[in-house]
Image (tube, rainbow, N blue to C red; front, side):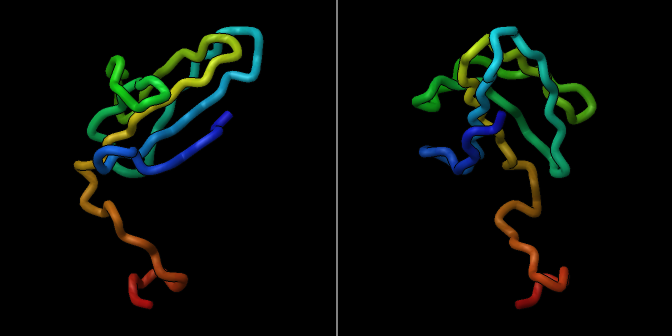
Length: 93
């Protein structure tokens, strides 16, 4: 369950906080519609712990029972970073 999505406290990365609301370990994979440079597992203070391995743009992670997992998603290779789409899709407001 996604519990938070925010800009990192330090840097331009995106922070995803996910919660396993079950008594079992859960495995999941994530894929994005934009290029991802890397994804790191972090602690709640956003200090990097380890890097997730990716294959064909998908990243796998395991969630221990009843735990929050924090991921730092680095989109620095995305040339569209910071752009906001206009309602008509033209990029003009």
